[in-house]
Length: 388
Ligand code: NDP
Image (cartoon, rainbow, N blue to C red; front, side, top):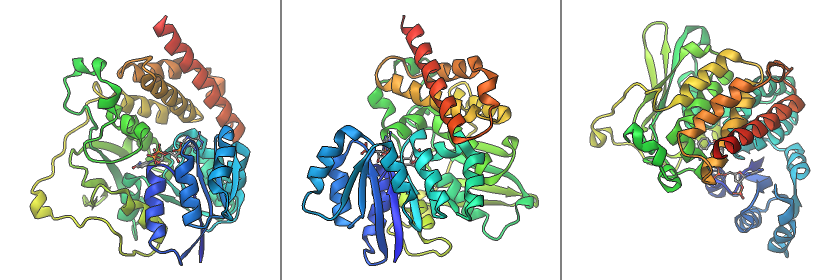
């Protein structure tokens, strides 16, 4: 039996992962499931999957978790130290699906144990790409992409030599505001930004899709994961979300990965890798779909893409600053403290005012977390100044 752990088990990716694992209960020995606020779901899944331990990131909810697990053999734990401890429990395969920079430390622990890390948490690579890659290498651990675009690129590269790769194209649906008049964006509501035309995802990534901060993170993730230059990566708006990515080779060939907008494909590929196994996803009928459309992204509508390119150029810990400022700006939008276009303005301002000393510090976990905290404070200050 394969020992598996799921970090962020109560979220959208976590629940899709559980859906696949629960179909083959005899194939998996579940070690740890983690969540944060959704104690009912966490306990229910931990009992159903007979996990060794269920961990909530929120220490204040430990008693609730204990109560929900009472009568079962599942151990209850809470807090950051417990999350890290769960990451250190031996597992063969770990799903990293906590949202935000909070996913970094548990993922590093799993890599240190030599586990295969299925990485949905793109923020880990954005904040600390070199640290993640060097930790995986040092512990002979494997990193598998779960983001649909990166899984698509990974699949298009099977049997290929990276030296023949000229470019990588990642697609973007354009999110909720793809066709909105630009002057209406300042009036966009939280409900409007939280509704995705094609994908059913967590609220934060859905809003990040509308602002293209999600694609901005993925640009950086692509560079880190596949080791290509920023100018080799293109973003293409593709409203139907059928082609997830394409790889362009030096003979002019473009290998495109086509699949339904269902994360269980990419999760299942990472779960079954290096084999393929049947998955319960829709089989596309291209004759029925008829046509697929593409257009270049508009960087006035989506300034996040320009900011990501600046971050790739700058390097060092600027990814951690970018992500933390973005997460704080997103909190600000969700709380109603800033409007939709202001998210990019806040991130731009934080990147411009960051002390170069923070960005050029060596990439250790401590320095990444310091840069993260500093950028969050700077973003809160910018948001407060704008309000005042
Ligand atoms: P969700 O918001 O649906 O789920 C997030 C998970 O993280 C939940 O289990 C949540 O617990 C937990 N969590 C929240 N805050 C913390 C914290 N501070 N510490 C520890 N755990 C926490 O997110 P998604 O599943 O949509 O996304 C997860 C990751 O996968 C993100 O990095 C996202 O960018 C990436 N991703 C998601 C895709 C998707 O289709 N959803 C596609 C590709 C990548 P609780 O719910 O109990 O509060």
